[in-house]
View (cartoon, helix red, strand yellow):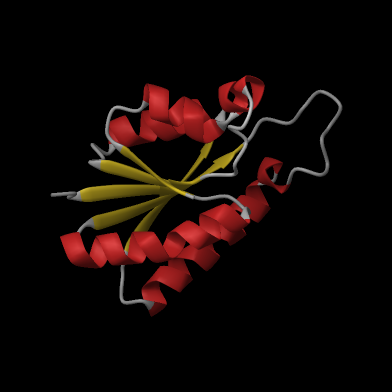
Length: 135
């Protein structure tokens, strides 16, 4: 059913929580797993608090996630890209012909402003394939 699953990851607790769902889906569907992490462009002021601006931190995150899935018996491909997360996730899903994107949700959708700014919300609206949002 889902031949290729894309799992975009960042440093959030929600992404870590979604990993268990990804393991179950990949094993059940015997899917190919692709891990994606996006290096975000730096803000003009140099947002030092956002670790996702660092290529080294993103590479370390991808390696850790790869190793975590490997311990579960799942071989995963990894992709690191630079750009705006929502657009980059959708572009990669299209490039790899993903059948499903699995994402954690940070709960920003309680207000109209939060929903409009949420990466998950944007991906859900722009994605070329179904999106599973893990609360």
